[in-house]
Length: 253
DNA sequence: GATCCGTGGCA
DNA sequence: TTGCCAAGGAT
Image 1 (cartoon, rainbow, N blue to C red):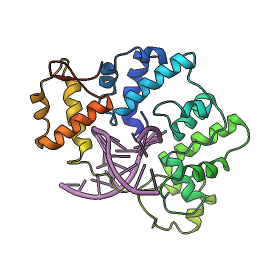
Image 2 (image 1 turned 30 degrees about the horizontal axis):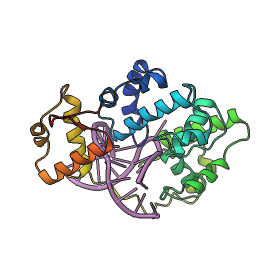
Image 3 (image 1 turned 60 degrees about the horizontal axis):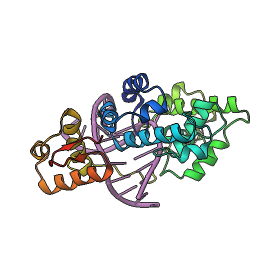
Image 4 (image 1 turned 180 degrees about the horizontal axis):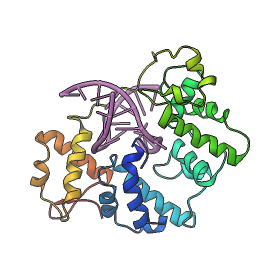
């Protein structure tokens, strides 16, 4: 849920989610339609399907216990470098570099003296953070959460609060005079008018309807017929929607 | 490595 | 208002 999504938006949904499906097997047993509705408007709904798939794998192959091994975690649907290591470090207290957008920014500034992080380079980023971790598992896990919090609360993207930063005296960026970032930026993702917006509109119709809907109901969600059809087809391909024998559309079972 | 995949808050 | 950004991952 936290992938590319602010903590404040995730928290209430996560709380309800965990009360409803407290174990992997409980989630795996739920219909996908229920999972997608509970996901609500968190965004990137394919994450909900992948989480559902991951729950099934954990239930069937890992004894209903989330694995602690990074390789086993990364093999799960929707679990990549960041999520696997976050589970290992924060769920199991292991020494494991955790690199998210916050940590990359902290390292770029405090270690490399740059104004911000460039494009992600997984291997190099992991090596940078690994070099900062103490040897003992428990100590390393504390440093890991500290790095993330520092980036989320103090060393923020727009207006870093260097005045209250605990590593200000050691920060290479401050030492260099806080130069502005000049490197390449991740291209700003357009949204208005894109397929992502259209898919979101269509899925919103299906989420809100507690019975299959006619095509006309989806037609009302977007005026450009060609784009609408293309997006509806992509939702079907992704398993985020299904078409019934009578031609109506619904969230997948 | 570049691109695609949602949504909403905030400056 | 518009642009930026948010505990990334898959292809």
